[in-house]
Length: 356
Image 1 (spheres, rainbow, N blue to C red):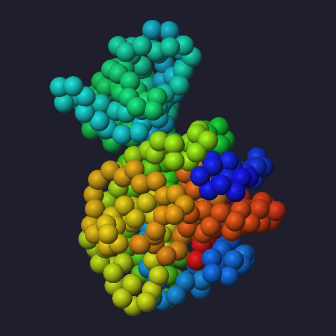
Image 2 (image 1 turned 30 degrees about the vertical axis):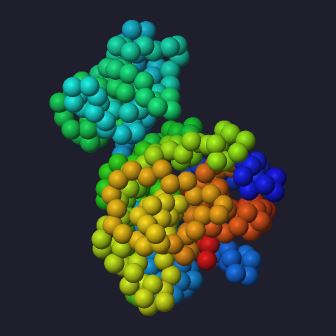
Image 3 (image 1 turned 45 degrees about the vertical axis):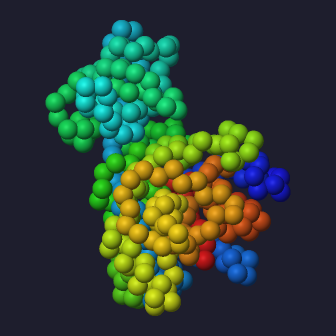
C-alpha cells in the first residue's frame, strides 16, 4: 500500500478468496466482531451478541430500514433466444411519462434499442416482456416493462434475491429470501442489503432496548455502484454514485437528545453514515429526503456519527475510503490484517467491525 491518502492503491489489500463468506451463520448474532478503539489504537475480539455490553445506556443505534427487492432478473432475448440477465436498480420516467426501469444487464452479443427481452419467473415460465428503450449513465439500460401492474408486483412475480456475485456466483437459495434481509427492513427499494444490519436479531434488539440503548431509522436504498472498485489512480477522480436516502424528523430528534445526554450515535453500516452526514448542514442535523452523492474521503469532518458498525469491505472501494476516513488508514490496515490473520469472514455474509 502507498501512504498517500489520495492514492487509490492506499485502500487496496489482498483478500483471500477462502475468507469470503458463502453462507450466513445459523445465528445472526453469533458473528465475530473486531472492536477497533480509535483513541488507544487497540484491537480486541468479541461477537455481535456482545453489543449491549460494548455500548452505553445513553447511546443511540441508527439503522437503515431499506428493504431489498427481488431485483435479479433472468430472461431470453426475443430475437436470438440467448440468455439474458439483469438487475433492477430503480424506477424512472422516460419520454411521455412512461414508467420505466433503470437496470444493469449482461448477455452475449450487442443488444440494441428496440429489442425485447422475455423475463422468466423462478419456475422458468415466461412472465413479462421488457422493451429496451435507451441507455443510461454508468453502463445502465432504460427498459419499459410491458405490464400494467406496479413495479413491486412485477418484481415479486419475476425477480430473485440479488445476491452479490461473490456469494455462490449470485445464485440464491430459498433461505436467502430471509437471510439477505434485515429484521427491521421496511422501505422497499434496495438492490443490495445494508449488510451491517444483517447481524441483528429481534432478541438482540430487545437486549439493547432493555439496557437503555435506543434505536432510530434512516432509509438509504443501496445501489450496486457502492461496491464497484475505484478505477482511477486518485480517489478524488472516482465518480461517486447517487443513491436516495431519507432522515426523518424523529431520527433527528433522537440524535439531538442522545447528544444532550452525552451519549454516542452508532451508525449501523456505511449507508447510515452517508445518510446522517448528508442530512447535516453547517454542523447541524436536519430532516432530509432526496438524492445523495456524498463521498466521504480523508479530511471529512463527521458531525452526526460517533461510532460505526460495519462489515469487512472489498478492497479499493469507496467503502474502504469511508472507514479509513473515520478510523484512520493505519488503524484500518492493522484491523484488516488482524481480521485476515484470525480468519474472520468477509463481505455481505461475513463478520463485522465496531469502530468506537
